[in-house]
Image 1 (cartoon, protein in one colour):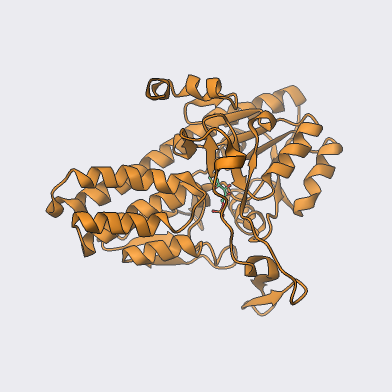
Image 2 (image 1 turned 135 degrees about the vertical axis):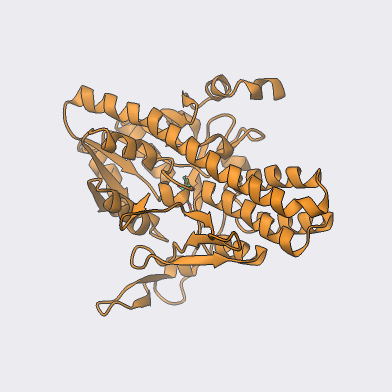
Length: 365
Ligand code: MRU
């Protein structure tokens, strides 16, 4: 995506290949700053502290983290140690585990002296494939939006939750890719952006992206979506996912489930957009089986923002002494999901629907 006229991916190698660069998402939207990841520990910390976030992007960052680890210790023990450290950074998004499994399996079969080059090449391939997947998701999902616009004969209103745009992937995004594709094709799209407490990925990151791309949008408090749907002001919801089960249960940022319930009650179509790397073929019951990350209470009790003078300030917003819980994700059961938009097309949220798009999984089952 373009920022100030320059095209950026969210993760890329330095010109001399010595370090990995990422956009520091904890500074957005007020400062656009890059961070250098020179070691595996840098990559693990960037994921843990959400300098990088979003399921596909943390997968790619982990793959580069493994490559950086190979520079320090390319032994077989070094591979397993790095995989264990990187896999422990965030528990819910399956893309992280998927990317590590893929990159590590390439390395395990290779000589130690080949591992650095192989690991960087594999991380680069995973990144490039993510861009291609997201572009295809945009094309497939964009058709849904242009069909809705054609049927309606005017501007369409899309509601999205959290940030599933280019900042959450390597480029384009998942839920936002159809919006970019439709907007670029001249479809009149307006986006309702859920602020997405507690970390405000919607207000900070989705709004930043849409503004940079010139897509009309309005930020709303998380609680506003149901009201807007009741009043016919939302034509379709599109969200991303951190892990989707083989049965079509969609795990995504906390609050997604409530939006799906409101969409169901108001007959608003509700889509999840995700690449194949987000599907966990080993799980069927998302509510019971997907591990939900518990994050620091401070994300709920405190807010950080820009002061009038241009600095950053953190303030407390919860009554001191009250206990706080901070589950970071929830699961929307497949019955509430109209369809799953993938790089291969659109599937019903069901085992048959997903296996129809990924028949090679039928053989493996
Ligand atoms: O906690 P985050 O910011 O990593 O959560 C991100 C989301 O929930 C996204 O919607 C999801 O990763 C899909 S990203 C294309």
